[in-house]
Every structure is written in structure tokens, then in C-alpha cells.
Image 1: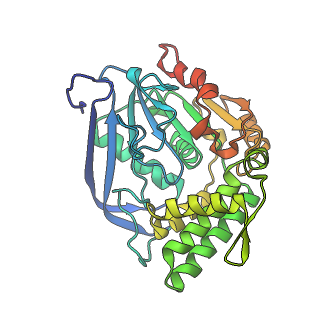
Image 2 (image 1 turned 90 degrees about the vertical axis):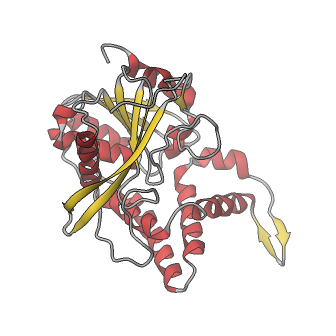
Length: 335
């Protein structure tokens, strides 16, 4: 599979979709028939091939030529950025069950549970479709890190190494508690005919868990203002705005499915016999640094780099300067 020929091969991109015929058996039971998989492959044909996977709202557009809001890792990935895509070939896909073009639930559909192992199987079928036998690296952040671990457990012969950010072999019960409340909020809103409003509130709550206490103290320690007989706090305005933005581009049923998929995540890291560079953030409320330390101790070839960031769990979206030397090493011949 070759990328399109253009004057700038580093930005040349091939996008496609294909249907996987027959039954696709799911890890937690049930199956889906004739699933559609949407993907994007960008970069010079001779460059090292990597897969990039983001959070549950991540998708096949990792970066874009124009910063038009269509790409989810625009601050980090691209020619000359922390992830130097002029020297890499980057493959990504829309998650099964997500809000992209890969098969996903329709509103109100009784869609079966999806696991990170199922996403790993989607990736394996995609590699087979593109006739790709081996990857230099899978970069996975948040949910994408979980999928990377699941893939490497099942298919270590197809990937040289992993770079996993803010993800462990299972979720922390406190993080599950926050997400359970988010899912209950969305389900209640769907039952009362306000699915978008419920998703916006769930996302607002999620934003409070993504970032650090220090960032919120620095940004939102202002006085509330009186509006229509009630006080509105600066942090409240921020959270609700982020919630509305998210609800405008993401489907409630997909959120429910993939949020649950996070909490179902379990892998046996003792079976992952490839080098794993794990990056943990001390301020991450969702993936405590102690969980990542424990995981790395059990990995046969694990190494942990700890970083500090005001952005907490969202550091992988924001910390270009800290991530640049780690991501740039992927282009080295001995990486």
C-alpha cells in the first residue's frame, strides 16, 4: 500500500475504508457482522512505520496540513513538530464503536461491549489489509495506550516496541467511579430526551479529572459573577464550554460504549515481550503514577519515564517540549 504521490511526500496521505466480511467475534461475547474499518496512512513510503492511537475521541486524523481543528494531535504531530512526521510513516484508524467512520452504534442500538482486545484485532485486520507485517512502534496515549498493550500481548511479533503514555494494564477504581457517574448522566439524559445535554455534562465532569489541581488554581481562582439570580464561577464556564464543544462532535452512544471499554480493560503485561517505554505524569488523576510504576515492574522489558505537568492526564496533548526527545528517538535506526 503506497501513499499518494505528491510534491510533499511527508504530508502525502492515503485514506480508505474496507469491510471485513463475516462475523467479528468480540472479547466479552457477541459478534458484529461485516464491520467497516476506516484508516489513514501518511508519510514517506521508505520511512519507519508507526501506529498512533489516542483517547476514545481520537481518530484516524492524527495531524493535518492546516490547523483546522480536524486533527486530534495537531500540537504534537506534524512536520517539524515533537513527533516529526516528515521522517515517519503514520498509520491510524477510527476506533470500533467510536464517532468516526468505523462501525459504531446507531442511536439507541443495543451494541455489544467492545474491549481493548477487540480494538487490537481491528488493528491486526487493518495491517493484514494493507499488507503490513511489522511496525517500528505503536504510540498509544490514554485509551490508545491500553489498545497498544493489548495488541503487543497478542501479536508481539508484529511490533518492535511500544511507547505508552498515561495508560496501565487496568484502570484505577477511582477513575472508574468518575466514569460510572458520567455514563449514568448520559443514560439519564437519553431517557429524558436530552442526549447532547447529558453528554456535555459528562464531558464537563471528565475535564475536571483530565487536568491538575495546580492548573485549575492558576487559571480559575477568580470571583464568581451574578447572572440571572445565581452565581457563575469561572471554572464552571470553562467546563460547560468544553462540554458543549464535545457534544457537538461526538455521539452519546459511542461515548457510552468506549467509556465502558476503558473500565473493562485488563491485560497481562507479563506476556508483553517487546520493549515498552512508559511515560507517566505525576499529576495524572486518572492513571496514578504508582499504577504505572507497578506495571513497568512486571513488564519483561519495561522502562518508565516520569514527568510533571500542569495538564495532568492531558499532558500527552500539550507537552510538546517534554515529549519531543522521546518521540524523535523513533526515527533513529537503532530505535
